[in-house]
Length: 304
Length: 304
Image (cartoon, rainbow over all chains, first blue to last red; front, side):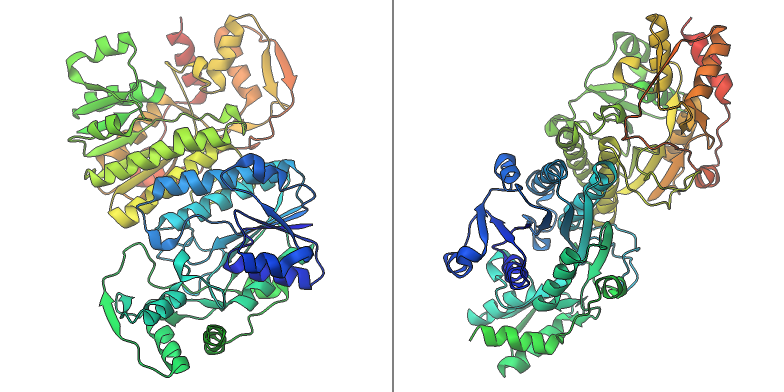
């Protein structure tokens, strides 16, 4: 059985759907489930409520789980460094505790969704390969990197097979602006509220946007291919789009002009983040298919 | 003023003595001070009692401190991985909190004593350069590496200059077997108690032993040379000695034969740890001077 942790989230909902469609037996684990999701999944998914900060409830959720897909993250890049200590307490510690439990429970593969946009340092070459130096400059990246290192330790010491997916910026239907998930939902929300769009810096900072279906395909391959174990893989589109590119694609999609407000940089973001995804393409027999513009159109259509 | 944190420990006592002798103004910070140390230091050292897990007492200790020498460690390699979560709570979190305070208090240089024997992975080439992959396999190494990464983040974001010293296995007078500090004091204690010496594995595992005066010289250079900032440096002798070599040197020094008991490996130790110290030699204009055998003799003499 595949245990998807953080199943009620943006990526979680999509990956559960895809794994069920591929014939996998899936346990969806989350602190809570949206009622519409619970009704859609019905009997096809084993839904288990568990609180990540409660090790006992997490431990019991591991029963019969052979593969873990770990999507839970209580930190977000947008919080900057005010939450350093909280992120260690509420994110790193529960992850380490759960990985130890998973190793002891005999989990065969542990797929951890890390952050391609924050684990590499600001001096990394672009596009950034997996071998680049990891020197995060924000708390979110630090927690992701720390969890990666502990996972690799459990692999060495306890034999837990890991797959670390350093994912770039996913986007698509179901992404929730309330949880601070990405630029695109934030722009759409500001627009709905009739407020100007805040642009950090000059708007030329680039990010690597990957459409949710491409991400879900990559996770599915990482889960399914038995030869994929103890690997670190970048997952992204492998191309950069600036904030101004994003705004322009949304303006084209909506047929409007957005009002912009330029504000200073936060200082804890790297200016350029584009992943080299050559390794994932080769090892996962995968490649991202949805163009940025097509993805934006599908996302806008889903909101109509 | 130089703040030495963990001043009452083995390395701390030696480094305070050396810094005072070199004419530096020194604040010694510790949870407690041995009475004989307090009487020796007297008026020459500003002794401040502070508890590392109490951020307020640590913050006030930073007043007028330009350089921090951070030696505090509540974790030890010998505890293995039973203490993973405790090490994060009691070691990583207080360090991160203190580094943030130091950055905000305007500290100019932060010298962190890390662990050359545990931050590199078991697959690292030997002798191991600073550029080797860092993949600790025990909790002690994980906490040291995590603290390193946070320190580098504070350097990038807050401008705190760091010097990370990845120290091999120091030994010398004052090393305390009660705190689990190293193989040599443990052997001497077992011998004093008339018990056989436990040898993990076949006794051929090698470690890089550095005599305390050589280590203290390196720390002194890292503190004093203004051009040494934002550097990671291995500090060791650069040569390996096996457990059997250590036993043999002690037997020669004491003119006896020690009774040995071979027990299985702990599984969370790397088999071979020897540092490449070329970078430190060049940048610190330093080199280790005391041979292993001479160091053992001086240590045995000090116990007479």
